[in-house]
Image 1 (cartoon, rainbow, N blue to C red):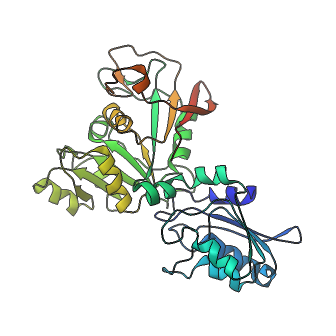
Image 2: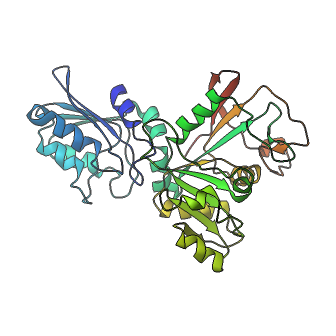
Length: 354
């Protein structure tokens, strides 16, 4: 199962709206086939593993990170494919809450005489499939907040200068982080200040463009910004309350303009993004956006990069006002991992997902 979990992570961030699944087929102690969900979400991991195994799949055990699908979509159900290939035993890490599956995949396997075991590697699988689970159960994506700040929690000088707070090793780690998400979300203020491109610049990832999402209630986004001028090549969405002529101009440049109410709750934004298929979204700021997501209690993970430098109280805060009235009301996370990148550190923080 450890191998299947490792395979599951390979295309994480590149398979939405589907989950990124890993599958390993073992027979007589030998791996006869392996697969992981292909870019774009199809073929599924089980299909690929069975194709690679060929006739050797008969009598094998399948280790799968998520309950095999049982519904007919653009491809036949994976549960049926496993049965037809003669798989003797299926070990499932975790069940699928998607109402189209939700126990039926396991039931179909058992009805066909396949031995099914559930729960091996469940905790790791639940973390890998958190975005899929949240979309299925809570109607929103998995949201991670990325922060790159000074020791005193500042992301820029008072004049907006922020290049660069962290050193190159930490910035490369940010690229690796982006690779694991379907989309990168940013506020219009950060776009105006930095004119970012918001791409994953890791070698080999050029063809795996992330959806770039800008929260821009008043459509302040410049037509000459790098996001707009590259929108025909890289998916770019702008969420706005403005439906004027500029929205039409942006759409003509390839930007997907999504109209939402000026006072739309952040939770409703999650529903909007989930309805468009997103399962994993990396929130990159700025401070007001970070504060809004934290106040809305929909931040599932924080990647906090910290540089050994001080900016001072006149700098721009990494997180906007939360207005908690007592300590028990502040957002609390548990530290899962602490990594060092040169002179900078990365704290990975998580909250329990239900």
